[in-house]
Image 1 (cartoon, rainbow, N blue to C red):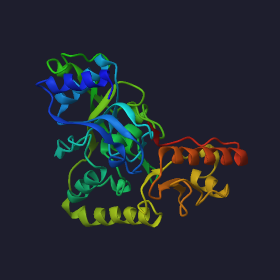
Image 2 (image 1 turned 45 degrees about the horizontal axis):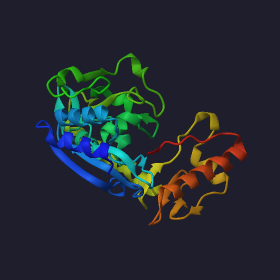
Image 3 (image 1 turned 45 degrees about the vertical axis):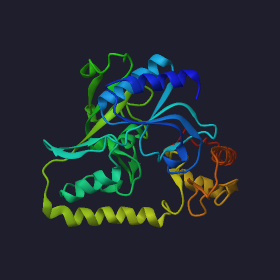
Image 4 (image 1 turned 135 degrees about the horizontal axis):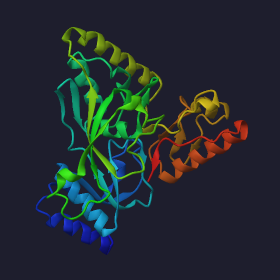
Length: 321
């Protein structure tokens, strides 16, 4: 750990407002569904918004990079690791029904949120059954499942704006905690894009439209959720460690990215410990000892071969950090 990072860690530890974990040189393979990649210099798990503000302020003032981690289902960390602070939102896991909405902490597992909807007889989240990761991550990426964008289910979101955050962030926390209201028929969203990308907003809560619970609908909703889960299982989403779909789909291509990769003859192709799944062209799996470099090499190979055949450049959906 370099001197700059060490000083930031000491500042965080010395803050009476910080509550949560602080781990040094934490293997990120333990926190991503691909089970690959190096260590984070610092792995933090704040327990509340005040602690999150302390972390963000310390990183910004100390000039350190920080990255917000959801469920790690769309993230692959470099083999050399991340020289900064990975911030896990795992402690932000509450789910409750309030004023006709389902209010979720950003770290709530998407599966738990879907089950909450079903248990309360509230329809609308069935296509997201079986989706790994957190609802904050799904909101950030505008997750799309079975032609349904999660943005269409979101009423609003609470976020911490860290653009001007400073050491007094806890004292003036209310100035940095803001609400995004999903109005204008989703004009701020598009395919796999959200208004939270490329800015200074850390999602802390996601508020989903719910309406009136109807317990009589519970069996039907649960059955529909199970249908989507079984379809994911049949497609091999859970056969081996992976990050799900590696590439975005594009209507310009005329067919899904996985089909283009299949046509390029790459299904089952292996580099090192990484393999394009024999059962799905748009999934790269970790066969046991895959490195980030192995995965990136397969990504480049798929992009090159598909571009040679079609002229289209596949765009990554996963984040390489």
